[in-house]
Length: 115
Image (cartoon, rainbow, N blue to C red; front, side, top):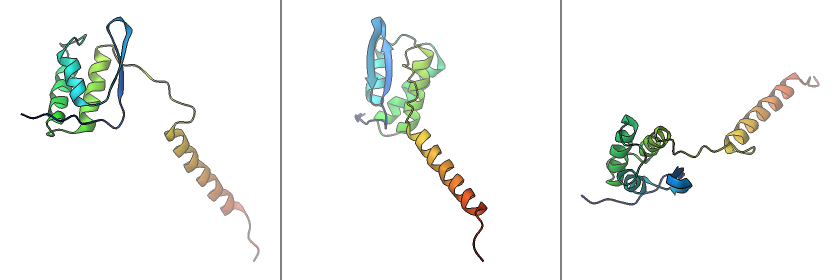
């Protein structure tokens, strides 16, 4: 069956043997790594990731779910690179914008208007 080289919305950074750091960009690359010299091939996370990534390569599974399963397999193999959140991450920015808007609304409601 034909496979397709599709890409995740964000790569998954892993470290394999001898501190070899890789940025895995999609399910096809993930399958090739897991079928090769993957450090841990016995967990349910590994089997689920391999299955889900294989399905995604064949356009029979979701990209998001294949990425989630691969992250779980990388965690189980102690290969996932944990990133520290940025001070200016998009989520922080969105939350700040939301709470700033709420504070401005609250101030506007507390300000007396001339009758």
